[in-house]
Length: 325
Ligand code: FAD
Image (tube, rainbow, N blue to C red):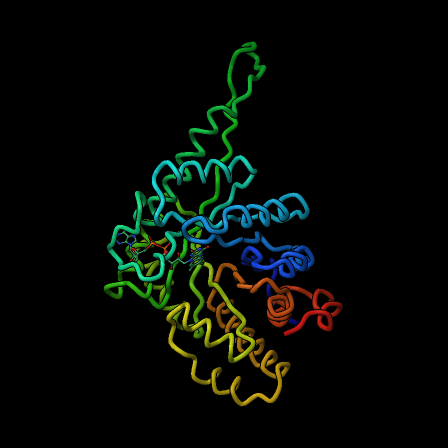
């Protein structure tokens, strides 16, 4: 029996993109989005530069997903350094653009700022941003009511208040600034109480990091799905960069194998093999879904999904020769 047959109904999956940073990246992104969209993800999320640096480019990518695919776009939003007024306006702008799915993150402080400094702005945590998104949607949706004809006559107003989905970030190995082991679980509980309905994890390299965290979070009262964030790391250079940014511990065996590889293609295969093995362990441990960090390319993400039997090989067959590793 194939893995695809053993995983019915299909485990959902989703992808993350970032707004393009060059003309060439902008030109190639629509094709990447179409390739990712055609395998039926739950949503495609688009990151947001803390401090608002990517407001327009993020919105442009989200609009493309909304208008040119049948996939739901999910907008990352950050609140670090912004006033209540600015955050309110930002949320309203994205809702007006038709976005109904968000990933509320606080955002990192600007380089050189000290945690606890004035950099935070009016909203000090992602939990407050979750509340704000729900509040803005509720205020805004008051205007989205329609008169309805009932048996009792005309005049009743049927509320037509679509809810928004708000996801949050969580850190199985602890946020780099967490002061104690259980702080990340307490923070996740606070986010859940604020109205988050989904959590997506920071990348990690060992299934036990995720499975242990989910078990402890569930015991503490977290009931929202915690979706593992998976990053296929397909080169030594990428691994080094990812470790710098995430402050995760180096996966020694993967690092050794990548360093010993003799070609870029061999490194790619090693990275994919590692991610497939990790994803299989997560699915066997009942992960509710998989979220793949794509680096704005489709080949690695689709290869991993194919490897675990969640998409069939036709999704990768035509594209393997076209995209560099
Ligand atoms: P918070 O949950 O607000 O946590 C920040 C700090 O405050 C933590 O140390 C936490 O322990 C503490 N804290 C929070 N709530 C409480 C509470 N109620 N009580 C006590 N302490 C609390 N960054 C971007 O700039 N743009 C993106 O698009 C982006 N997307 C991301 C997507 C994912 C899946 C992940 C995992 C991270 C992403 N980030 C992004 C990075 C994120 O902004 C940083 O990691 C940031 O430092 C923390 O964000 P947060 O939402 O977890 O913040």
